[in-house]
Image (cartoon, rainbow, N blue to C red; front, top):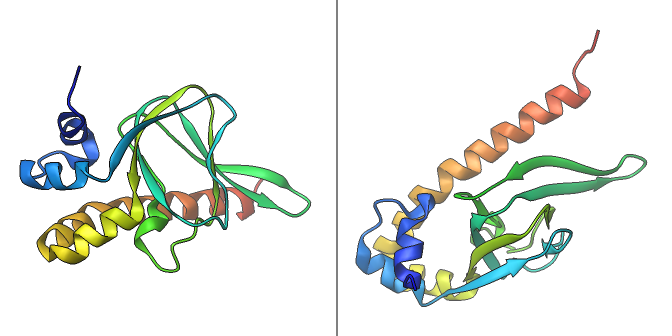
Length: 153
């Protein structure tokens, strides 16, 4: 059976991470699975975990009055879900729902924040990895808004 540290270091998000940092963050990790329709988390809930997706697809959703639930992004294996663990007030701003069987590594957010605080080099490494993901998600959301609210016809 594959060691959890190897799984984490093999995930695209952590590609090239120093193996020592892999061992450190592994202390915050555990395997999880979600069945189709299960929520990984709901909007406004405390952002207690982040997920490294290994298998399956997850819909990121918002609920809008008179429009119902809207999927603004779908993520799959090799991606991460739950970026709100890093930014105060540490609350999710959307729902994340499994579209099919999802296998993931759950990272305990408080544990990870404490390890980053204790080792600022690790914290900087994490910020360098999360910032591009945040920017890509922001850009994808902006494009969705333009598609939904832009001129048609």
